[in-house]
Image (cartoon, rainbow, N blue to C red; front, side, top):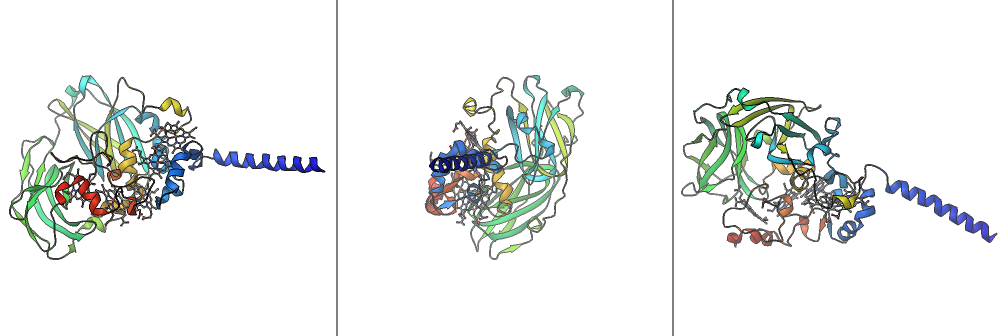
Length: 387
Ligand code: HEC
Ligand code: HEC
Ligand code: HEC
Ligand code: HEC
Ligand code: HEC
């Protein structure tokens, strides 16, 4: 009698263990992560504001290099562990231009293209010898011609802001110089070359003021043009910004056509994708095939974790797409000269600001998962001059 009961109990327990074990090892969820990273879970679940994807155990959405890749990028993890990324473009566009040097005769570049942060293509391209290439068609000696400068939007989001738009006759960078009395404030330079420019201004923009501004564009060879002076009035809010209505996007796989040119002793490459993508360009590291440290601790089956700039900025945009179009604090920018970022605000190792410079990734006791209890306190930590 008694023995039967015990056998029964043991059988039930055994059954439960099997169910539990299959659950733990099930593919595709974050439950398998918690087996080893329970500390991260426990620490975060005690907090008052928990990030929804963390609570849903969508750990892979942010951490797994392979989670974002479709068939196209099935091997992307293996290919990106030893890449030295040179440049990243954050605005989706079918066509991207990069100018870069290939030191020491290295001839393999790596291109990563992502559509809406999800569909990803990682591919390697072999550089043809520089001497065989034609001069870049973008290589004329003329500075860009600026036209159609206009104020597209005056808006109140997280910050009061104004959006300036203009066109150039050739590919060029975007920057606006502006001010109340004289143009003295510069927006961060947007280096992604385009002919259709938009720049959002937030620094020093207040309601019911009149500003003067000039726009500046520099082509791929550094020829620079500055526009005449224009007037920006923030008396009332309005929007002519086509970007905020346009939402239609093509589907399907990403396909890339590269075109190589030469600009002096540098390569110029134009990559044309079959749909609008963000893009990063890098070179294979020669002697350091190891990714991050600590990798041996993790064993062979650990997911390939994303590089830091991807977890700290790129993945955030996959779910917070609208946030990108809203007026937000700049990310991927360096501190101005003289600006000191206190150590409690995480940045990339080279000092660039990311989403995580202001927000916790998993959970926080502060509203909006902020790093400080109040917005003002958050800002003046870095902008002592806002006091
Ligand atoms: C078998 C145990 C184990 C499992 C399962 C596991 N990890 Fe890890 N993980 C480790 C160890 C060990 C380290 C290295 C020590 C550290 O940094 O904490 C690590 C490090 C990390 C890091 C930080 C270092 C880096 O490479 O960025 C992240 C992020 C991470 N794991 C995420 C995950 C996710 C997401 C999952 C689930 C898909 C997972 N881990 C599953 C053991 C594990
Ligand atoms: C919204 C995206 C996101 C989700 C979802 C997410 N993480 Fe993270 N996690 C991050 C970011 C960002 C970092 C900071 C790492 C960095 O700077 O590279 C981080 C850091 C980590 C680290 C290393 C640092 C530490 O605190 O020890 C581990 C381990 C980790 N996460 C595990 C997990 C696990 C387990 C889950 C699922 C329960 C998860 N993460 C869900 C974004 C996320
Ligand atoms: C897998 C999807 C996903 C990813 C990736 C993601 N988030 Fe979120 N996030 C959400 C959801 C869902 C919410 C809650 C609903 C909402 O407010 O949109 C949220 C809310 C937030 C909030 C507001 C929290 C609050 O209390 O109102 C912040 C801030 C935030 N996320 C920052 C980030 C940052 C920074 C990253 C990149 C490290 C990131 N998110 C990546 C899905 C995601
Ligand atoms: C300089 C600090 C700072 C940086 C950098 C920053 N944020 Fe925020 N974010 C804030 C503040 C402050 C709020 C609170 C909103 C408010 O007070 O108007 C906020 C709010 C949010 C919200 C909730 C807003 C809403 O209306 O639902 C999301 C989502 C968010 N941030 C995502 C991000 C993402 C993604 C990034 C990186 C691209 C980022 N943040 C970078 C300061 C920052
Ligand atoms: C982690 C440090 C940090 C925090 C916190 C921070 N900023 Fe910044 N902020 C920067 C850096 C770095 C820049 C880029 C350099 C520059 O243009 O001043 C910048 C730029 C700006 C700009 C200029 C944007 C432009 O387009 O020219 C404004 C406005 C601004 N921050 C406002 C704020 C506000 C408001 C807060 C609080 C919600 C805040 N910042 C919090 C570091 C920070």
